[in-house]
Each structure stands twice: as structure tokens, then as C-alpha cells.
Image (tube, rainbow, N blue to C red; front, side):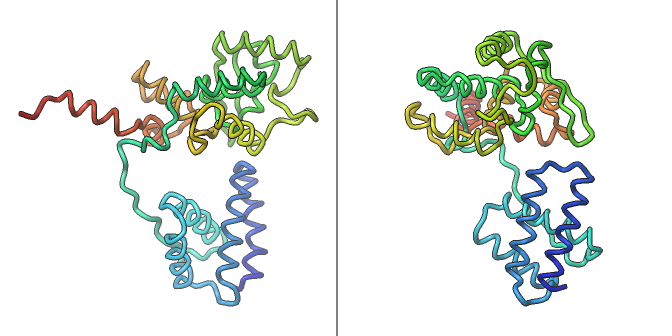
Length: 279
């Protein structure tokens, strides 16, 4: 199979993913990954040997987790076109029991981001941060936080054939109700652009990054998914119920939830020191 044919079949594959209710962002990423592989091939045919060469090139450029994401896109595509023999093994990644301190957003840093947003009179951003971190919602699900949901005190998320209810805590609900009144929003999504469209991932990233310098928080830590991780860690510390947390986050596997509650090595070090196993 040559590059042009591959790109044509990739379009069919993406349409299939749409039927499977994969999110728009996932479909775009898969298409980009397949197109990059086609670009790598150039005029060479698609063979198992060339797929392995591409895998090696990816390992030189990306972290193992990113490599596996890109390979998963290709493997799915190969299965779709009936070329199972082209599939390659994903990299084995050793499970880490803690995350690096450089990546962990602390509660203190999060609260400083909120204070900074308030100081800058950016109420929408302040409430956006609190909504993500206070409910554990995915950034792609924010459109389900509507005026109607706020008045009910809960949002019903329906994605990929699954339905789950996200509770809106009372303090957050009251703040959102005041915001809705001030902004004269009576229905539809709470967090919208000036034109009334729901904020997308890129809008939110830019808004959050703009806070970092004044808040004194490393911008590498500040992105929507890290707020979800902070929610998960805080919830687990209070409840210690992994199964319940998995339900709240919308995870089908507790193994995924375990990744969310990883803390920095500093906490593990404190636990080890308290074991008192040294003279």
C-alpha cells in the first residue's frame, strides 16, 4: 500500500471512529498520527519492517507514553484495513508509584491561581478553574455544565454511549448562579466565548497559562487535566474509596484511577521515614 492509498483509507477509518462515537479530538489526533506515518513512508511501501523503523524513530523523539499513543492509532488503522500483520507491539512502561514533583500541581498552587484570577477581575476564569477542579470533570465535558445543570445542582454527561451524573457542590453552584445572573445567561453552556460558543480546549489552555507568571506557578503544571488529577488526589485522601472515585471520574478501570491519585515522591519518602526500620 502506497502513501496516497493510505491517506484515502485513513479518511474511511476516521469516519468509522466517528460511528464508534470517538471524540472529535481523538479522531483528529489519530488522523494526524496516520498522516505522519504516511509522510515517513514517502515513496516506500507500507511493510512491517517500515512500521518497526517508524517505531524506532518515534522512540528517539517522544516519551514512551506518547509513542504508545501514536502506535495505538496505527495499530487500530491496520486492523481496520485488514492488515493485522503490520501491527507492532507497544512499549512496555514500568508502573511508577509516584509522579515527579515537577509535574504535580499542589492545592496551594491551585488556590494561588484562583486568587490571581480574582485579582485580575477574571471571574469566568476563576470559576472555570474551580469547576474543573471542584467536580473532576474532563475539559471536553465542560459544555455539559449548563445554566440548567447549575440550577439543578448536577450535570448529566452523555458521551461514547455512557451516561454519568456530575454533582455541582453547593458553594460552587451559588457562585455559578451569581455569574449566570451577572452575565445574563439563562440557558446553554456556562463557559462561552464572546460569540456565545462553548470554550474549547485551546481557549482554556491560553486562559490558564496567562495566570502562571503573576501567580508564581510553573506553567508546565498548569493545564486542565492536571486540575482533574488534583481533584482525584484530594477526593481519595478524604474518602479512600478507589471504586467510588473511579465512578466519579467516569473511569471504566480502577487501573486508570490509580494513575490519577499518584502523588510526588516526597510523600512516599515521608511514609518510608515513619517506618522506623533504621538504627
